[in-house]
Length: 369
Image (cartoon, rainbow, N blue to C red; front, side, top):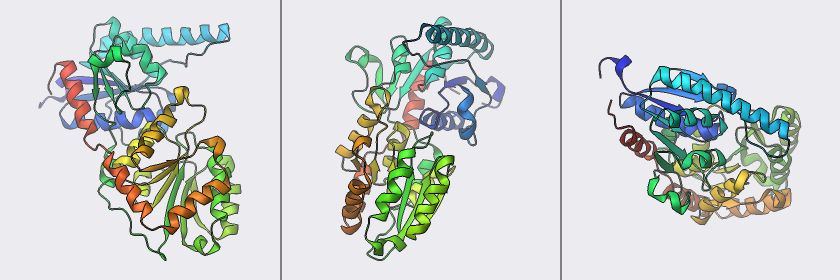
């Protein structure tokens, strides 16, 4: 379509963390390539992730997490959600989107409620093996449900569900083209360690100590890239320096897919985007699910990749330097294990998930660019 201003608009709604925004970014790129316009509705946490998001405009709405207990807190939450819904109604009337696509997180509720009230078609995508609470609140009235895993939805909603897989960003698709790095008895061993969008103190507390328990002859071969909370950087750096282990530490890495592709092993949380990207790129991992994740969704995500042979799962209450060192020793001494895990992980990846989701969105919206 030559006149971009008249191209159909698809409004994407996502919570402001990487787990919600990365699949939204992947879909946005496909839709823009197909000639659509894309806007994004999210919250204030979005600043770290907007570098390559192809949104015409970004709209920040008022939202909050629904929690029980304190009546005042609940009333305040409902007020914020109500105010956000009212603002979203005015926003959607102005934008006139052909469809609204929600990726989970409570900031998606106001625009999804507004779309329902204005009879605008809606699609929700849930990246986890267990559907998130925000998506469950809108699943019954959504026009269609896209999932990253089989059996994510309740049986009563199966008629609306399509397994598209989890869309991955263009940077992940590019990284997926890299072969697994060669590994020999003398080559460097490259590790990437991270704890999700909020970091993870447990990684800084356990991983350096575990690496220190490995045979000393391995220390000069180790090359670690690790995400650390700002307050943990100095102490973690001191441990690695003492051990003689080469380490690059930072609170946030913008080029993480490329770093994952260059690694032999990843140690990480098991959020949906992390697991999807590990599978797409095809890298073995030790996964430590967030212990307090709602509905144990991270444990379910990790278990799925582990069942395929692409990951080892260690619950956080069982994560010790000694236990992790034992697992790593086995991985580093049997040179066939890591490449085999990489191959198994790769077999679970879906590089065309964004295309599949775009097909579904276009079908629900009933429009073409």
